[in-house]
Image 1: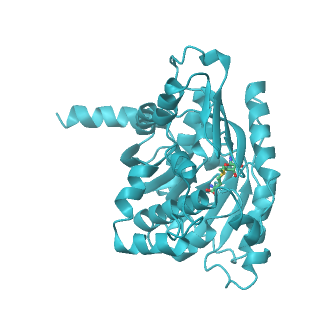
Image 2 (image 1 turned 90 degrees about the vertical axis):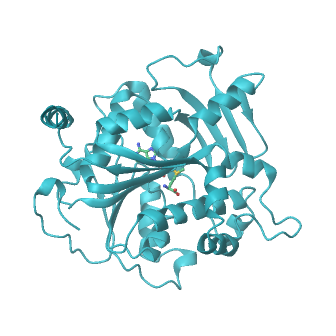
Length: 359
Ligand SMILES: C[S@@+](CC[C@H](N)C(=O)[O-])C[C@H]1O[C@@H](n2cnc3c(N)ncnc32)[C@H](O)[C@@H]1O
């Protein structure tokens, strides 16, 4: 693991016990409605208690949850290397810790706005949960931070840390798209925390699919027995004008989510990411992703082991409604091409000069 912006720093050799810390969370410069929704989202996730194995297996979306885990495992397998340092934005209750352990990473930092989730992640890391009792200790040191990672400048809040090889943001990036400032702060955070050549991997709702489904629906809501998406009257014409930020809907996923979220128009996301030195490597809707990677022997085997699609017996298959809900999501991967992105204006100027000199 090397240092950020070429400044050599000592490796953080803290012992492999989690150090829960609180970064600056003041949102004093943000509009009141943003503060309210951030708090609402944080409280929603904080209040979700850890489920027992039996409760998880009884969930109406158990196959969808397993499918999501399979997709995250495949992404990690494809884009993380042994010894990588990993920054996990919106890490939740640490549900991906085991996946990162299997990838033999060297260091992990998880950030989440929900204090309860950070506490759960710390307990999971320390082996203090029911289902972690017999598990061996994690092989990497971890730091768990409670902060709004779409508002706080992480390069300042975590300036004692070296740079990261991988930044992961799983099922959380859509919470950053409420305003242009937050979307930009998020991309600034990703790019300044990543090493040049570092990977930014994630999953989030697929705005194209959501808009298509909205336009096909009779009213302003659509869904099935496991999910519901509801737009407000502001969108009664089903048209989305610029700027492409702050397009809010309410998302309900049975036994998982009930929160305001924001559309992330993918082409705008790619254009903005490029401004911050991140180039698109791949984007796939979950259906396409599953159809491609299930063909690969090792991932097919993992899918069977997890039982995400079911085992073919009556009542133990992914339901049509869960499979339709999976279609709401996409996976993305970007690579950082920035040398030093702490100042995007400077970077843009250097890029222009480079192209002029290159003729
Ligand atoms: C659907 S959960 C996903 C959790 C985890 N990444 C996973 O894949 O299991 C979304 C997470 O994003 C977090 N989140 C939402 N807004 C956030 C923000 N502004 N800053 C940090 N975390 C945020 C929530 O608290 C929640 O833990």
